[in-house]
Image 1 (cartoon, rainbow over the protein chains, first blue to last red):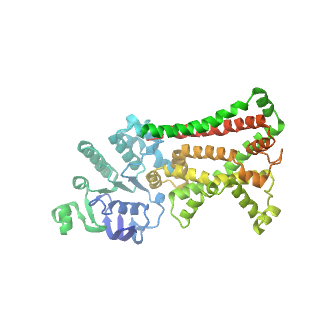
Image 2: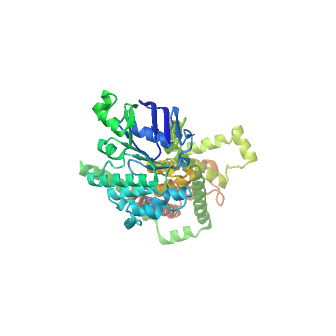
Image 3: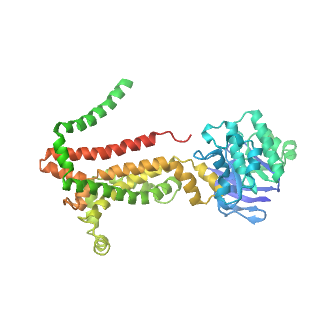
Length: 227
Length: 256
């Protein structure tokens, strides 16, 4: 489904070195690691928001390394959610559909499943933290992305709300056979959500594999210490 | 500390306010009426308003994309451009006008004058002088307006399928709108009050290149204080009015 081969990227003093990740269709894959390890940079490289120095990114066997950001057809929930403050919740959710001239076929379904129907006409600055997360998820889900990427989206939430949204994400992924990549440093989140995990330490992949392998058989001392 | 700093701030009000109030000593209704019904004065007011509007439109045409580029991208020469934006402010207006005149005496300038348009001592000269004066400040304001728009909103909009132009129109422009309108008003007010460069490039010909600030200067030279005061009041109404409007616009609560 998505394959990252030998990706290298230098950004100031920080460097991503020889990143290799292979993710199967329909899987939820967590990119796990301590703060500053380079997790979000990998995500931005997949999205096309960061130019890579060398390596390849394949999506469904197609080389997308140099494909324009808007032509990748991915869904995205950034860390700060990035809801458009001048648009209503409804317009936020419909943004991707209008931008890429897709059909609104999923709108009603997604509004229902993400439970945002009661505040569709409100603006982001009047929403609670949990409501904002739901809108950001709905906006990413509704374009029926081939790949959904989330950058530590549930960081600021309390445990109860987090679990609710984990469940929502899992159900959506199963229902639409969506492949998901989630960047996180939260071990519980990775364990609950992920089918497979890449542990990133100091800009390198320390271990790739199924969730159980990572947690039960860490490949190196550094992974074991982190886990 | 608080009292002292407030006293210093009040000094500014006292100085500028006092200077403005002092003009009313020479102002009377009949001289204001006769000044504002004079064909020459009305021509100067009209010339000022039209020239300031045209030069602002031209300046924004360059300043908007340039401000966006300076705000969003890193490129060779960016720091030099950033420094040059203040160039019209650091050279005196008369020197700026002289530089423009000198340019039109160079081979390239002479060719432009003969084959494209002769800016010297013409209405076009007023626009050129105002344009050169305000371009830097308009770009600086536009850049600040774009700096205020969170880059992650633009990135997210692009990932969701919007091409660069669509994202600019639907996300960047609406969010930078207040700052850009402020930039437009402040640039217009600066163009309206421009004197030195306009005088040097376009001259002081009544019914041809006489703007409001030039008219003030010429009436003062003739020791016609009452008309001078009426003209100053007219300029203050337009200039300060637009500044207060820009301030009000920029102080309105933005989206959180």
